[in-house]
Image 1: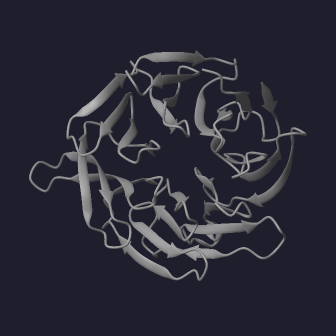
Image 2: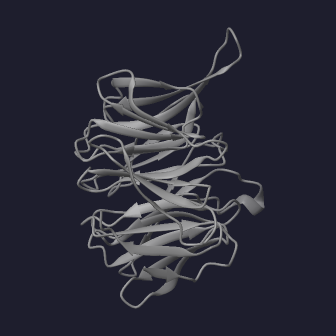
Length: 307
């Protein structure tokens, strides 16, 4: 086990992402910094500052050379809009992907398509850009998106969390919606009793997991009812991720643990507690050999996956 310390103590590490080769890791924190970690040396370098509200999501491009995160660089001038910012590890100038003037959501998320061609972000709306030309390809959502999204492993579908307020009852209705990312055609819709905070696809592209407050819910498309649901008591699930081979689902839980379930029979197989406080985010290396988790202490734990 490796404990990485570089972010300010007691400033939450909100998001982690492994490089495609698994040799490095990027992280963003409530301390307003983005760091690139050399996992062999256990050291980091500062690659970005966050302005305004700290980013809660970071993504490594499949090319292994580009990192993207969300930021509000002009917040001190009263401009609350989010921008998607990229950083080129080879030293070249990164890009800026602006969102609309009325997108003031506090929890934007960002991800790349598996082939690296598309860059997607979700706040009140969903955005798709061409990652190379920076052209905005589409925008939709009408301020009903709950700020989470993920591509399927083949890149053919995009799952998005939605929260609608009923015009008749005034109550919020929550659901996971799976789209064709280019046509916006809906491939499936799964209702949830709670706001969806995070989504993750398994390697088969059919199994979709959602962290919904104190519920962890898993659907097997196209079936409408969940194949697995776990209630976390008064504590909430935070980050979720499948192992790259799809055999296990991991979830961080603010009882200070990371828990893992077998996707064969949905039995809990492991629970980890490293004594670093509440754990918020988790990521697996692409080869599945290592995982990383970060949390409210500002520390990141990297460990060998052996189940």
